[in-house]
Length: 147
Image (cartoon, rainbow, N blue to C red; front, side):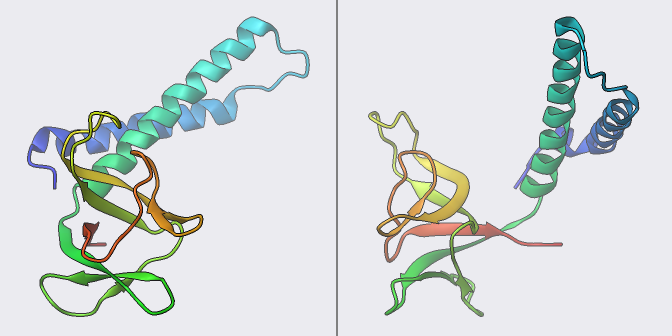
């Protein structure tokens, strides 16, 4: 969870800037014979707008509290999260957003800690990115909870 209010303090201003850029892009005329310079400027504005929207999504997502658990594989080979705090389990499938706790690896150039991505499948379920580690029974995971 985000510990510093500095990240959430400016969420409104970031959202407003993103909206203004989106509106600007909607109003920019699109010419069939746009020059290279005009095309480069348009592309730069799109990139800035995209990055602001990425920041807005990240602040919203990482401001939510987490719920930790571990993976359990069922007889069909699918995984679900069994939460430490009890309650119902959470089934996972391709595209499911999760965070996994990975051990550090010099080869993969990652430090020990939490990593955020999604579940994918190719000859078994794996965590996308960070060396694509296979999911396994007992793997420490967490999800974000809240609205």
